[in-house]
Length: 267
Image (tube, rainbow, N blue to C red; front, side, top):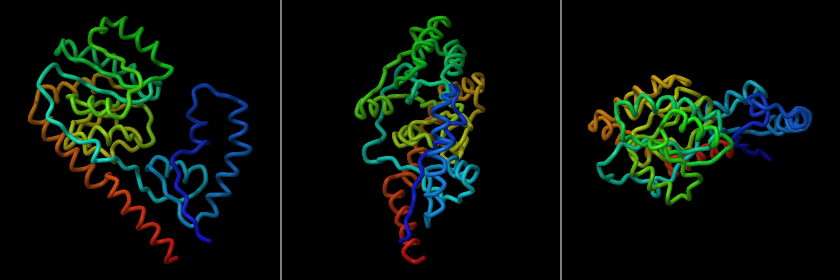
């Protein structure tokens, strides 16, 4: 019987990116999980993945071709709201880990806050980097400009999306950043690093800005450009919402998945 396999991430890829090598875990991945992955992948009639990054990892590690379906976002829940004018608020949502590039965001904040002293950087999420971030924020004299909120439930996170001026994702590595889709669905402009699948989601200069990773100056410049131009923010926010509705809504994702199931039926 033909079957479809959807891949969200690969254990082998995670092992190669790990900063702290756990020899026992890597041995299990290499000797057990990797061969099992390979066996299952080789028998699937159709393989899909959530991102071009994962598809490339499938090709690299398993010589397997995967159709990119992507992830979807609930565009009926994540909706725009007319935010009140106030101090600029730059939001990040995600795990507090090195791969998210948050130490570069703190350095970036120094330049932004020189120009906009009342700007606030809001970090929603938790992770092992939290104490390091707090110390770095205090050392740079930015305690009044940063708020670390920890993990938020869906409803509270929605309010922060809707009331933020800009969403920022300074990652060094991503597979498929759903937080970008959530922010875009809420109609706010985004600034993200040009890594992995971000360039597939963001059209640079149209619905947000893409900057090089590990470059706090470029990150700050993009944020300041948006803070200085309300019309640009509104235009990019509207374009963000349109792009998510067209390509990444749950309806769009369902249609794409159904087309692949139809393919299986006829082959």
